[in-house]
Length: 361
Image (cartoon, rainbow, N blue to C red; front, side):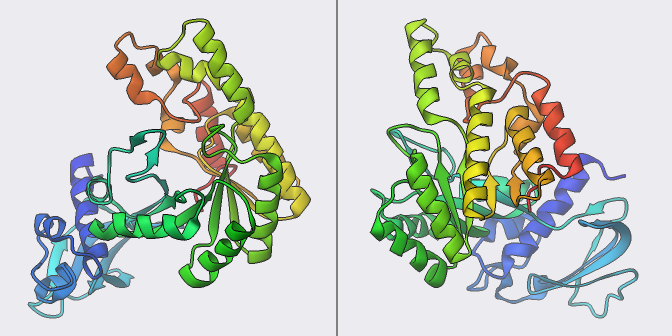
């Protein structure tokens, strides 16, 4: 069995190969031993463009098998046992005793996102560096409109992504509703290939949409054949909970979780599912963090509704004890929305992921 370090090294090599043909990631390619220097990064020519990974255990969605992997110009062209080397221009990587996995795809990221006077710490370069180091070779980020304008938001994110070092795609957030937004959604789908739209049911006074706007958005997604996504928390109740915490003098990280308990995530998830059922359109519930939300998704799936529940690592492995750390600098690192929950939720979410109630595809 591969050790974590050996597995990580091989994933880095595969990550560099996967992005070499289309993005100028010279530093990553050099670290992995690729042949940089061409105008298109590692894929610009030289003997680094043909790679044979031999002797590893190839793990994909349907099986694990002993096999070799042959790559040309950043594209996997053959996966089978005992692929011959061919000639001296093929770079051979010995993967004996290691797992060989496809690069991961992260469908939910917020790079260089501006929100409530802050900006997320990673941009499209530093975030990509971290992703590649862990074997993630593609992600989908959320475009936040500029003053509600989708086109301006997309142009802003295209500019941010000029420093990209790996493949990426975009979802589009919908933060207000009018005829222009409706028209722009069509443009996003037909001209830019963006076919997933996120609606925030939280963040009152900022990103939140009300039920009537959500309903119109769901109807538009259905007409376009696009996927509707929701951040499911009851924004009105969260605002009330936040004021309660302030009145009680609870202003530390622990107050974040106390102000937006699982019941509010479950309620919003239930409401979104029922509206999607009314419209008869698929629904993608992002970052499911509680059993309350998970159980609503499970019920809908049992009834035949097309609902996808998205798991995230933080919800699967952490619990809210971190928010009670006496050191503010430590506790504040674990603030997220929806928040991490009491111990027990994470284990239930792990089981839901294993059984297919939650999924990433």
